[in-house]
Image (cartoon, rainbow, N blue to C red; front, side, top):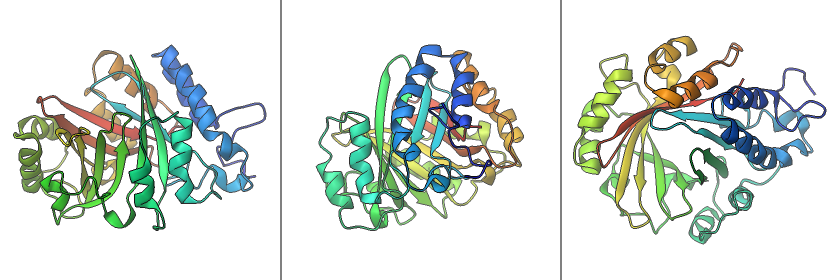
Length: 306
């Protein structure tokens, strides 16, 4: 096994970069970091037992190095957030949604999502995700084959029919609500304003917060959006996102832009994530700006652990 790979060392339960990130987060949110570490250890156990040990810690599309864990930050709250693979690389993608559900002790009906994936060609299958904050929350990320939403969600909102959007995955919550993610190769500010008006009724909160982060006069391309809906189909939030490297020169520039976007413990969580050592590769992944139906807006970002 290559020494360059971030695999668990003898006696360790987690890849070294993940363990180091959790250690930094423990100084800010000790109980939440410990809970995240315990669940991540369970999530990654199948990878540690993989028949392909040289592949297990570098195969995932979650991060730019293939590391099967990404942490996330948002300015709206202080929490330890992560997304992870739940199955070894040799496992079939069609099995990953059920395995992620088993990890998270899922109680909601997954049959519509399993049926939608059945027999289809998948990009990643599924990921498990969790938020350890004042309360615990879990989410399943389900791959959408060929950019198609499952039948029970088609037609729920007119943005689902937009020719600008290619729907890639859905985050499924235990209460039946979803957050659907789309790639948009030709999205510009004018179209984003129209999307925000269609979804939220008013684009002001989203655009004001976006302009605090955006370093240019228009959106980088490609970018994307996510639409969060209740189980009954009511809009909860709209988020715009793109890769951090599409907007900024390097990780240091991202950090300079984001360090003032959070407050209190939220700012400390971001500082802990961003304090990891540089390794010559981009550490910030997707960066996003969102707003909810009540007019609250926030900034968020994925961060690869080092």
